[in-house]
Length: 74
Image (cartoon, rainbow, N blue to C red; front, side, top):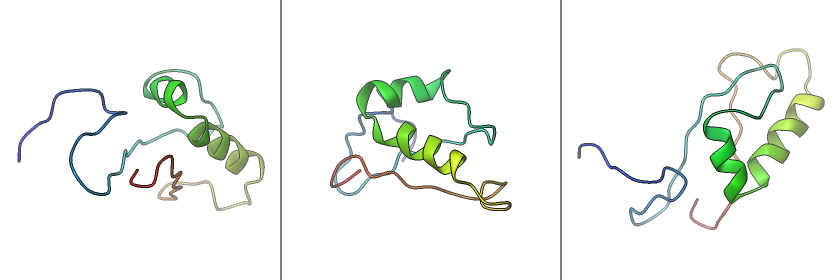
């Protein structure tokens, strides 16, 4: 397929889509790509910060994932 150039927060391919982002485990949100996500949708930040606040001993470590649906196909 190759590389697509454009806004990563506005994928244009047909069908279901995922925006994948690797983040820290210190509960910080405020620099880099997450700012573009926050500008478009509040759900990812809200869910991430809630997950951090309510974390259990091993559920916020390396390899854990979280999904935040922001549209029906995204």
